Length: 114
Length: 113
Image (cartoon, each protein chain N blue to C red):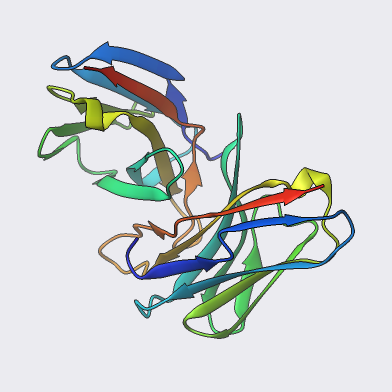
């Protein structure tokens, strides 16, 4: 999985609790992304980052925040988890160079909110 | 919506047969990419085709792009059981933010031995 790790890989939590997912890369790529994948919806972008401290919203950003204080780490926080946030979360990276913007994905985090 | 839409949603074939999946989109694009996802794993990039290209090959994969019809197809020749996976197209819209891709819902391919 191209030097990308996600932690934790599985998490079960209760409604209303805060949750932080971590994505770590060793590729020194500029762009990092958080997606969620749900049956019938495919892959939807939550937030992305185009540099340290530079982030922007995706299609489904409500209820999520992100931070990127170092090139290699991108954190996704659910401030107060809800059952609708039960999903599989994928981190991806890209160097988005002139050669193309291929994305490389981590192994995913399965989050269950009870 | 800028995302690609794959067709069919599911495809079931025998080993040795060819598998064809299609992707349609609505906007002008910079490039279109195909990804593969094995069950329980992250997506893996297969091939990228730019808007000024019409066909690309990579091993048993052949991708075509018809910008006039806003569609692309992915052909896997001589399929193997190991090709069983979900396949996604992703588009980079022309003028969209660098690095921003829009993914479809995927085609689930099952190859029977």
